[in-house]
Image (tube, rainbow, N blue to C red; front, side, top):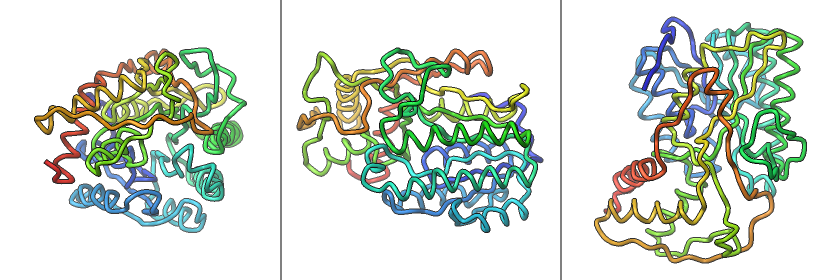
Length: 341
């Protein structure tokens, strides 16, 4: 991977540092000798032991500082900015999950709206060189035109999670306009890989296999009109973020939004076959999931498909990891981490 021109004298603040993307990004920055301050509330949305395992890999770095806290706590956040004086802020702290937002809306308002507002306020009063923040492909809602482009209409979200991410983009635009904060939003497309999120399909399917339970496939069993997802391997995501760090917007309104995806959507059933093959390779035996087909869940969208032309123009971004290679790396990690071989 190519990490050019990262300034080791700058302070890089990563919120959600015990999360999937936050951990991988922090590790790569630390490998480059950068000073990283990480904030995370270690919530129990999924198994906290995995979050602690990620943190344990970061703690040995001398230039890493961890602060447990919730970005919805404005006082804590302001004090952290005052104490550490970050130059670059990457806000990855958020309540994730489309389906969970239907069951637990309060947590999304607290973390994704109030928490992000606090981040913007902190950047307003403590000058930063660049704020990068997590948006989501979910903002495209049920758009039928593919691939999704950043200029597409995104005012019809189909979940509260998507609505919260669209709100983040609007809030960031306003603060950039009012207070000259260079700000970049990242619309992530189905990120996967080792140390990933257990609530994601690839992780959940693997858990089900080892638990001896059928996997639930929410496509009505309709293979002709299957769901499509733009799966993006974690290393490609981290590479993109790192290249963007030193590319703050320099237009009149200092706010940009980029898709960061694979630009190669896969059928859900093809993805499942690739995961079965990766498991077969790792376990040295034939693996086939027991499958249960169910109706599409509220909030799910039929297709995610990223146009990455703008990102390619900005930083020469081209994902390099195939779905087969990425899933094999995930499964090899899973088998080792959970000692299931």
